Amino acid sequence: MRRYILKRLLLMIPVILGVIILVFTLMYLAPGDAVSVILGSGYTEEAAASLREELGLNDPYLVQLGRYLLQLVHLDFGDSWVSGVPVAQELLGRAPRTLLLGSASIVVTAVCGISLGIVAAIHQNKWPDTVSTVLALLGTSLPNFFFALLLVLVFAYYLNWLPAYGLGGIEHYILPIIANSVGGIAMLTRQTRSSMLEVIRSDYITMAKSKGLSNRQIIFQHMLPNAMIPVLTTIGMQFAGVIGGGIIIETVFSIPGVGYYLVTGCNNRDYNVVMGCTIVISVTFSLIMLAVDLLMAAIDPRIKAQFAESGARKRRRGNA
Image (tube, rainbow, N blue to C red; front, side, top):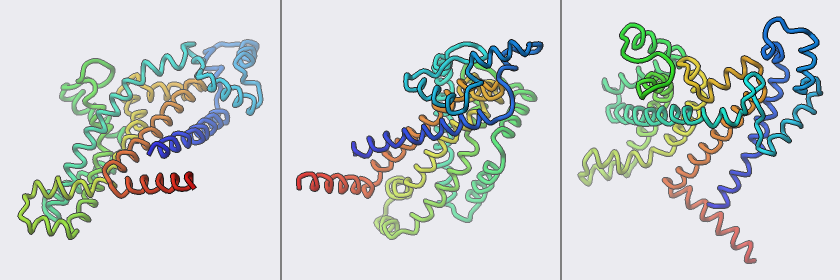
């Protein structure tokens, strides 16, 4: 298992490097000029030329890319071109808000999605199944930014129950968490229902019923553990999705997290901000997928046996 974790961590390096090069290239080729944003209106061509030279924007593409990669080797994300504040400092202040929003969203997604999926599978072709299927279809069809605007319109504008934007107490996170979870709940409901229906038809479930076990024991001790492998994969993808979807949600609700910082950097053509946010998001995504793989290995004895067998073969080759 240790070899596998080390291998996955090493494989993260080329993946993250590829993401860095891709995003840097897109920012380099994108139309617009960061100098005009930094200097504002009424700047002179002499001032613009001097600032471009100072920022290194006149250098060739490979020179700019190499300089940035060398900067990352020293764990330096650089300073924001617009505010002058170090990007790492801003990310450290904003990351907890994004992680709080993402973690709370995935908890709501997992609890609601798995529960609806179990109910739909147990009551197949009955009204609970129909209601869960319709809700899942609506959740999949509605974009999260549109659903977020609907929540703001109903609960903040008309009913005035919850704040529409900004930071504060827990009430400021209720609407963003709901908006960020609805798409994941829909997908997880469908996946859980499908996995549970496959397990229900298994022979060992029939045997468990013949032994007189209660429905609760059959569901939570036999059905759910065996149906969790594809569900866990979906949860991992949804965790990455809510981190990425948080970019839109943070913008809609004006939450100063990593996503809002990334959007601001894109609008201002602030290379250092965009690259810093991209690196943080890509590293977070890779670590989440590694954690999901390890959790699947802990739950499924077949995957654990594969790791044990692979390690035994390597030890035998080493002894030989």
